[in-house]
Length: 180
Image 1: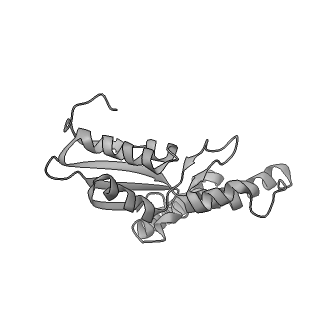
Image 2: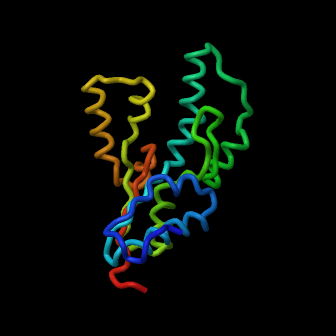
């Protein structure tokens, strides 16, 4: 429970809780608490981590980085249990040096979760776009590459299916205009 009265704020930011809460009921409780403390008609913004982006990381990017740094890829089964859980449930753990685990959303699921919690006029965007992981891994400062990644991010940020190519998703919606 947040230490704030009902309708105390114009907006609330959930920049972390949703992807650290594996259980849907816990995420809905976090949404509801943010909605409770925001005045009627105010905004709630919430970050999610893309399930598709997480899958790209564990299946392609991390093994490629391991191979590049050690000269060999770590042996693995064709479909490790942690990948199955990530694909089917959005529950996952990327490993001892990666993200500690939690819930990974599909953009459509995040877009459905927000109104279920009570928000209206919900919109979900992909923030960084499909080229961002390449820039992150390469640590590139090349202005042309960065401009290309920005162009892709802007083109795909609201496209169903394509917004999932962004590592982070941002949901936004308004609280109901009258208190319940």
